Image (cartoon, rainbow over all chains, first blue to last red; front, side):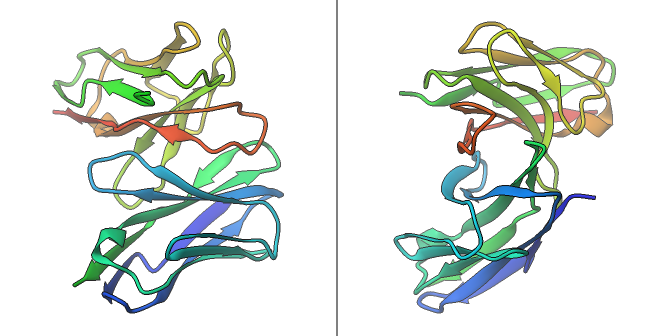
Length: 109
Length: 114
């Protein structure tokens, strides 16, 4: 069965304390992986698309990487405004998109 | 550009009542989607429309119907609401469903069924 999991469920960081969020997947053929950011009471906002193992994308303090079984979202020197829930989603060879449950990130000043 | 808009933002229904959630996008996207989001679970696809004139079931279509009114608008109808349909509903759109284009989401409708 196609499945996407994310860890940890929640993460609390001090401002400036770098860390990584994990997205693991078991799917029948990966066509791409998406990362989204979701602020409370709002819809998800697109961050990155990764297509193949070894690929990396960066945006400000965020860097996403992809292997054959998982993706990491690295947050370098986070700021309070980076606090949000981060969602990953996988597109399978059947054109199905499966979302993970998300990681809730809190960055404390 | 407003992007993806949804109405209403909040709604409370009694069991058995019906309602329609409205969604519109102004990005000239071909594909539109309806998701529900529940605590501890990922977004789950209810229905999608790959292009104007077509609709298909997603992962959790039971209890819902959709209408792709035109290229801009995609509505979701609950014919007889049940407490299990209490959720946050998101509409999304993308350039096309067939390729790896990202989805753009609306702000959501928070629905409570009592």
